[in-house]
Length: 452
Image (cartoon, rainbow, N blue to C red):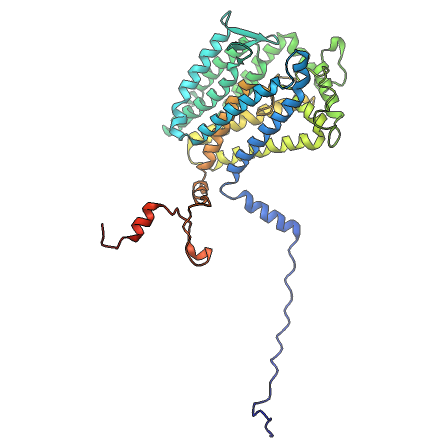
């Protein structure tokens, strides 16, 4: 066989590889669902949802309070930004309370339960003292602090019931007493009824509904049997029916559910004009500040019916965004309550979640004409410092509990600032966890193994 000029063997072709079938491309929808599930399962998901959702609701609420309250302020011969400045001051104080609550240990939260309950009861008693209590819109549930500043003690009763009830049930669970119905109810139900009675003396039906919802939420989380749960619910329904039957004003509110006409003597004026505001907003609204109903047609435009002004100015997109933020906040609260092993954290997180979601549902349902007008503000959104301060403290509770969720504390520990990190050679995966490049570590690293 003749050799080539280069004395090299002839090149041989590589054998053909067997053709393999290509893997089918993943469906984009399936890929999106997979990524979404991974994101939901991350340790810090609840932490970011609570922190981000509450801040977004508060900031958007400040914008809408400024827009909805301008006309009311001018009609009262006040500056147009009067209500906005008061709300901004309350939000600033509430942000400090939220930060404080988020950094407090669980033991300190439990220690504050009884002082907050005693303070709330004392203030509710002061409301009924002539010369101290102030009546607003026919309900005497305010205390004047001088000037234009007032406080509504019933709002702090919600926070007191959540903390005290969670601490009480957690201690009874540790002692294995929740299997007996008397320990399940006493003293939780009598103390709650005492708070309800003090609040009802001032005529505040809406807040009593929220406190009743918190009570049922705590009993449900404690594992109350169906018969016990139904019994407490039956007593609450009977008391509510008596309170509604003995008040023509409450009967009129019940009759205005689904009304599309103001009716005789304009008894459904507020509810109907709330529907008018929502209907005229369309998909994207008439524009921020361009509401027509806030020009004297819609009562309480910046408080109880601020959701209607939001629908008129920001449209369906704006209202659905608000509802989505509250839904995310509720989901995060449920997740925190479901993943913790601390009984107090479970009951407190469930109580706060029940409080905020129930109040949001009652307020939005009243604006939509699906529920009677209860006179409760939209949490974190409506004007009112007395409602904003305890709610932001409760949000701080949820943030503190979310930080203690399994895996969340370790994930937060890995989030170090960009400055001061120890830069080691090699790839990021080979370097291990980032650590602070402090003077103490540098000094200890410079010593020999036997030096002290």
